[in-house]
Image (cartoon, rainbow, N blue to C red):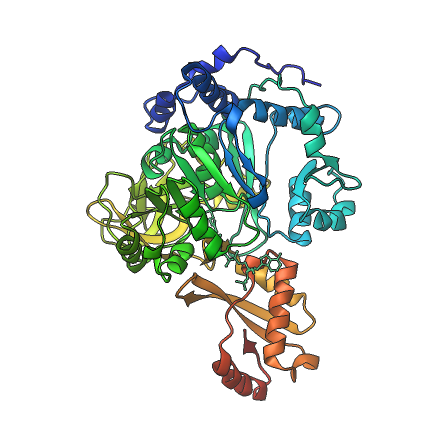
Length: 539
Ligand code: BCO
C-alpha cells in the first residue's frame, strides 16, 4: 500500500529537528525552507510529545480532546493518536489508498455548496474521494454519476448510507500506529476555490509549507496565541481563514481550537457560547461584530475572552469603537486573501489606527503600486501588491491549477497584485479603499458576479442579468441583481418573483451569493418605468 520511493517515518525524534523558532526564522527570511515538511509530523507530533514529556497541566491533551455531543461543541487539540487513526483511515489501501501518494491534497468546500457547485469542483479537480456529512450526501449522490474520477465516498455521520464508507466505523478499527508520509515542503497540500469577476471559481493551490509554516508569525502576533489559549474562529472550513485560524497558525502555537457546529449563525447561541466556555480568542467577520454591537453587550459576561480579531471584509472604525466601549476589548483587524494568506494585520503591541488594516506581515513586502507596477509614495491610492521578485515568498499559493493565464495575470512587474485598492500612510499602515475589479465582498464572502448571473439566467423568467455590489450597513456590501424579464413573466407579481428568483439562486449555487437587494417602492417605480419601456427591473 505504501508507494515505493516514499519514506515513512516511525521515529518521532526525526520530527524534533524543527522548532517553532525555526518556523519563525523561515518567515523572517532568516532561514531557508527545509527540503521536507509535513505539518502532522513536524508540528502536531511535536506538541503531543511535549505534552507527554512535560505533563504541564495544559487544559487539553491526547486524553482529553473533549466532545460535547449534545450541544455539538468540540474542543480539539493536537491529539496525535486521533490524527494518526484518521490518517490510517484515509490512507488505507482498501478504500482511499490511491490518494496517499504523494501526500493527500485536500480541497475544502463550504457547507453551503449546492449539487452544482460540488459537481463543478469534483470535475475540474478530478478528485478521487469526497468526505461529506449527512446533510451534503444527497447533493453528492445526485451528481456522482457525472464524476468518473470519484472512486470513494466517505460519510462522517453516526448513520450509515448505501454506497458510502462509514468514517466512524473505519475509525473505530483503525490502527494508532500509522506513521507520517514524508512530503516535500513545496509539494501540494491543499486547493481552495476562489471567485473572480468572470468565469467559474479558480483552484488556488497551496503547498505543505505555504499553509503549514507560512502563517507562524501571524499566529503569534496577530492571533496572539499561546499553548494555553482557546481560539474560536468562526469561519466555515471552506475558507482559508479557517485553515489559518482553526488549524495551522493555531496549532503551530499549540493552542486549542474551539468548534461550534452551529447549523446556521445564531446570535443568542453565539453569545451563550462566549459566556459559557473558556474561549480566550475570538475571530469573526466584521459582519458579526456589526450585528453584535447592536445588542446590549454589557449584559453579557464573557467567560475568558481576551483577544478579538476580525477579517474577510473591511471593518468600520465606528464598530471597533462601539465594541471597545461595550466590552473593553480591542478589535484587531487583519487583511488577507485565499492566494496569499494574511497580508496586513493590527498585531499585538502595535498602535491600532481605527479604520486601518494595520501593517504588512512578514515575510511580505506590501506596497501600493500603480498600473505600471511602480511603487507609489505614502498617501497615494493604488493597488495593494506584494513583492515577488526576485524571490516569490514561500507562503504564496503555487498556482491556479490548469490556468496558467490567470496565474500569470496576478503578476505586474515585480509584484503580485491583490485586486484590492488601498493607501499606505507615512507610518506604514494600510487603508482599504475597494476592489479594483467587480468582485463583491459581502459578509466576508468574495462573490463573483458571473456566478450569480449564471444562476439567474437559468430561471425561465430571466433573459439577461447584471449583478453588482450595493452598500449595506450590516454586511458591508450585498449582491444586487438587475434582470431583463422574459415575455411570459413581464406581468408577474414582482414581490413574488423576487422571492422566487432569490430562492432559485440559493438552490443553484451556494446560498450566501443570493441577491439580497430588494428596493421596495423604488423597485415598483422603476418597474413601472422599465415595464413601459419594455425593459428590466431590479432585485
Ligand atoms: O440571510 P438569509 O437568511 O436570507 O440567507 C442566508 C441563509 O439563511 C441562507 N442559507 C444558508 N444555508 C441555506 C440557505 N438557504 C437555503 N438553503 C440552505 N441550505 O443563505 C444565506 C447565507 O448567508 P450567510 O452565510 O451570510 O448567513 P448568515 O446566517 O447571515 O451569517 C452571517 C455570517 C457573518 C456568520 C456569515 O456571513 C459568515 O460566516 N461570514 C464570514 C465568511 C468568512 O468566513 N469569510 C472569510 C473568507 S477567507 C478570507 O477572506 C481571507 C482572509 C483571511
